[in-house]
Image (cartoon, rainbow, N blue to C red; front, side, top):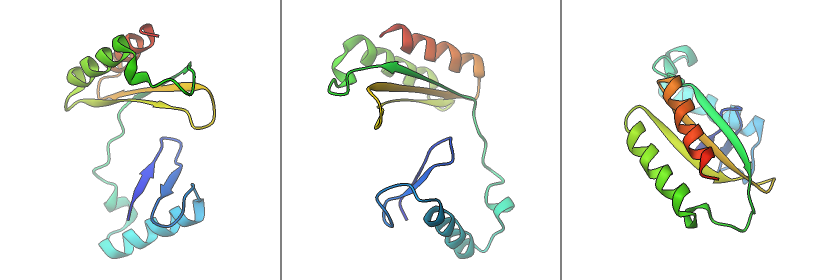
Length: 122
């Protein structure tokens, strides 16, 4: 089962549907629970949510952010800083001419610092 999710709770099950669908997502979770033989509370007991900071920056939808050297280098530097302690994501919005920046870390101050570094590149 291919399962992708967002912090909003929006899940996309690519092997069942091409877009987000709450009913399909719920059914897929129930199928996985049944196969595991565990309760939902047991299944997610090891889940830990890190603080997550997101920023949306106006950006031309046709411009690849990886061609922006300063942003690309800062992204890789932050990846190294967060190694094992969080993650960083940059992606184009699918609905607006914006770049979505996200940093999550077990240390909220580190996440804020990293998102500020990314935003300052643009």
